[in-house]
Length: 322
Length: 205
Image 1 (spheres, chains in turn yellow, purple):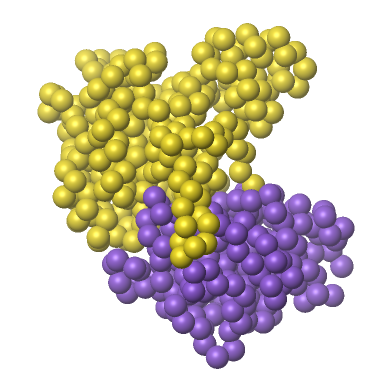
Image 2 (image 1 turned 180 degrees about the vertical axis):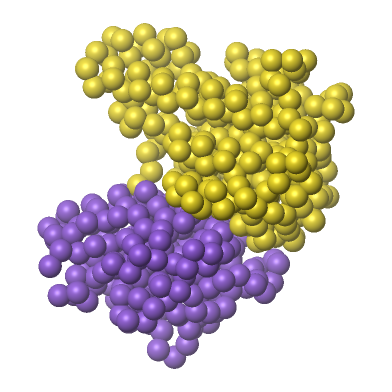
């Protein structure tokens, strides 16, 4: 059963249709959030071409995310990062059986529409690309294709869900190979969930209103989330994951799954590492299996990684105040 | 005797199926528990198994790695009831083709003599809900949730067709093995899970 807080019956993304005179409903929250539920306990891998997508599928990835450049390369290249080439996205969709996602810029409604027309399975409104609108994210209820958003806190996550996000990924710092920020943010979300749950359990509605005002979201979504004691949509971890042990640790913190960006295809042992990260995500609570997975990779082949404190560009801050 | 029903927790919507199966057990007033299972040891102690929705390539490859695929196959051959949902039904089949990519080379259980077309209704934008019926199970109306769903393109002689949607086969049964293309665990209706729990109960007692 899905927790369905905030379903909007009048959303433009919901399509009442007929298949040979049988009534059908597309783009409902059940169908959009349900898609994310099918990814649970899995790994979504960033890829830039068909060859990498095939490696990801072979390794057991639940989905691939198509980008023009890996986040670490975006960081190096500078300039404006936009959505990937449609031709490459289509080539990848024709080559793998697993779902294909692609990123659009924060607030860029028409990049998202282009991706929806391309028939990608999920759209990521992502801070890895250069934001098109710092103040307004996309109103995702207008889309039949589900959208995933990043968040650094419960407030950000709930704001995105109220805009219609079907899935959340707690942000790390993309393209660094440094998992510290991903850990910080999932712990922050968990802390805040515990806080509102405790308030809910105490029956102090006035204090929940205070939290809603602080989070800049409606009272309803705070109440529903507090009652559930978790985010009302699937939540993956993302940003800086480079090793099997990184993945296992984030799973142990209660994430529903993992996004791996540069960590795989920026290493020198991509094939083994892709497989190893999938194994560690699946068997995260069996330490012998995580050790076996960790043994499959060579630390000398890991991407070098960056200290988050010395970065000139902090992608995680993009769109965060909105 | 108390029932132990497992949900294969390699990958996919495990928790949703645990909740549906627990509700079904409570509503039926049957003595039993529902647990998530991953290892061959856990699986070997089950009276019934649900293989949830997810990505069939991932579930197949990883259940091959830790030896659970083999144990599941042996248990089903020994008569244990199994409910395969979407990716789970693909796992039960002996041949899976993708609508776009064609023949897939993925590990399957090969228990059900059916041919499957993966992503049969299209990609995620085409995913849909619609009313369906499972008359032979006495479920005249059910909210079918189809997410990048497969359909059955051909069945062997002893496989019963439980339901069709738009002329496509979306639920099948052979003995104690049930496969559905849609996701009952994403609805609040527990009737299909109740049917399965009853099947497990009859098979055990």
